[in-house]
Length: 140
Length: 169
Image 1 (tube, rainbow over the protein chains, first blue to last red):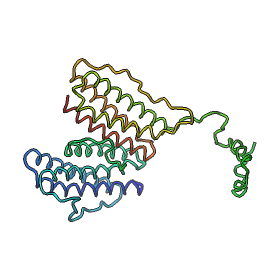
Image 2 (tube, one colour; image 1 turned 180 degrees about the vertical axis):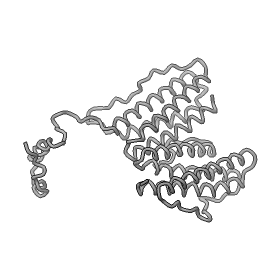
Image 3 (cartoon, chains in turn purple, blue; image 1 turned 60 degrees about the vertical axis):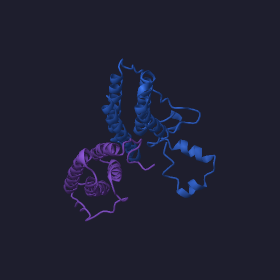
Image 4 (tube, rainbow over the protein chains, first blue to last red; image 1 turned 90 degrees about the vertical axis):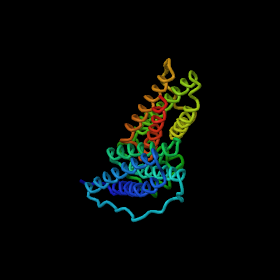
């Protein structure tokens, strides 16, 4: 199976975002409790599943999935519930932007895959931030 | 009649005067080029998709407006979503290049009937959001990459609206 370099690069970008999300939710969960922590754990697992899916897709396309980093810089300091929720929303916004790049490839199946993944991450971002946005993923 | 285009060298083209260039353009109508005297060319798939998207967004806004005019208590929940739909419409309309002096008809095409209960009205909006999001995904296939990204982003926004409405219903 052949795939364009652009498609592989976009999928590698989405994989990098998912790897970062898996790391980030570990931090998020550590500062939450009760239902919020359960929600963070659920989202953490969803990102692990998405990571596995992307790795399988890249392998099937003949590419080597980029490994996760050992650690990631957080975009801001997390010190409690509010900043943990803000970090979760920020993670999801980053994931949405990464899948937006997948939508730009020429393969219609990959486009739909990217668009559906954007919906999932946009919904999680809205849940964590408590607000919706007009253009998830787009840098205006 | 043979086409002039292959015969003309770039240097000759650059040297052509303002009066000869239109003639040249008319002569190039053969060999697959559209004849400018045949009227406007058919709309491209991208433009047709864009016009559909604008009409769908106008329809959605009309459903929101009609719902709000009947159930004003829903305003705090619905107004932010409606504002985002207006942003979608502005952004989509901004991608349409209208000929000078002419405006493309992109108004709403539905006459929504607002249900008799607030809950049913919210359910109707929920259904409309989901349908609109699905339609955006169907436009992705052959759209130009930046347009596909705009459709995908709007579909993602509409999916978050559906979540809000599902909690409200």
